[in-house]
Image (cartoon, rainbow, N blue to C red; front, side, top):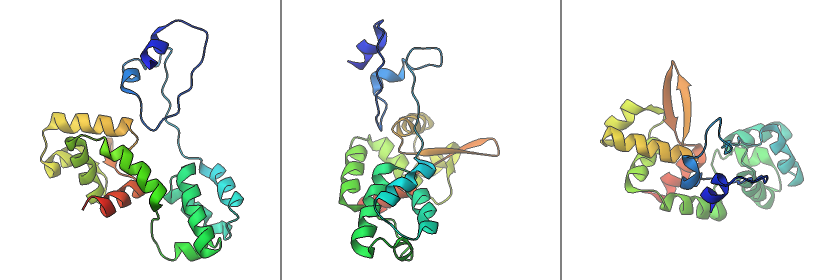
Amino acid sequence: MFKLIAETSHQSCLILNSWELPQDIVTLTDDNAPIRCLKLPGLGSAATEILREKRLTDEEQWHLLIETYQGNPLWLKIVATLIQDIFRGKVAEFIKYDNLYIGDELTKILKQHLERLSKIEKTVITTLSQEKPPLGIAELIEISKLPATDVFKAIQSLERRCLIETEEQQQQTYFKVSPIIQQYLILNCQ
């Protein structure tokens, strides 16, 4: 259906918000095409409104929550609810435990996303989650013992699904898993 909408001439505008880019759309996106794909970053400082609405205290500590949960509105609501329920809204008290809270709701969401991964994608994301510093392609191939083409395909797919992050260091690309996904994998994939 998305492909039909993308290839048909019309005056409409369709905005699709998804964690994962539909495969039909991947080949249709381009800087000069009518189809665009934008990765939305976390809310950043606007995330403070979520914490304010949940009546959390210790505002000077909020940046730690926002950074840890990557400004993701759902993730912040989940952890803010926990902080309100257990710590009576005291963020500093929660942070003392230096623990990433995922909770049942987020566990269910992550499980759904990760269950759809191929065996190779699971190997790559698990390998990335077990390594502390981000890994370059060569290191990832060596550690995972997978063929380079399989690693390339897996990286591309995982990045499109927003399950891994990239960063540039000294003109080389490195890959890593967010702390939340890493924690989920540690707790659920042993």
